[in-house]
Image (cartoon, rainbow, N blue to C red):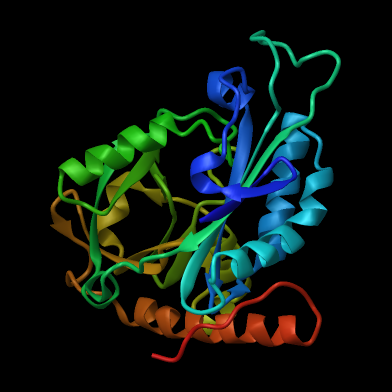
Length: 298
């Protein structure tokens, strides 16, 4: 596999960064993951906008962002990924400097890593039958809107879910269920579509933004608020959204069923709509309106 590292295209096994890189010693950097469908990058521009936001919040130079589409395009060719499912991974750290908490002076060049690789889809049963989740206390910092490479709290929560035989861990803050360890959360409660409002407590997912933007197609009013913990099992449907999860039904939480314990009708409709939205994004890209993607016919 060929990857991009600091201006060079090199075999993955030859890609090296210094042990003094601030991403290694401080998790001082951010990342992005975008989906690729048959060689087409889905919603790439919103991912790049979020990358710019994170770099701006961390005060890391963002000039590399404009080069990402061309870099990714070359990597797709280098790695023969013009067909099938793949991911685009981007990571930018503050760069290499002697260890000190304050930013290095003078400023050093950021470390920029970009990779494309095949993506193995989740089993069909995840969408057809739904997945299980558990709830965990939210121990993360209050700037989750920055897609930081410092993900230890998320890692520990997701590991707890895996050990419980669940797909995802749902964070609970102030007695409100807000999002998953690597996904956003939506609920249908009292005839409304709920999702936690964008703020420092969640990462505003690109797929989440798409669902919010297209909420009128679902036929339910949208309310941007979390699910009170005590009302979680009053929800008729729950689903996750994310770049690699797409639209994923949640049918059980903490061992108890959600609704009738099966993917609900609105979630099923959304799964179908998601495929159409990919086609629409691809059409927009073909017309010259930005990065898009197409999903293979199923």
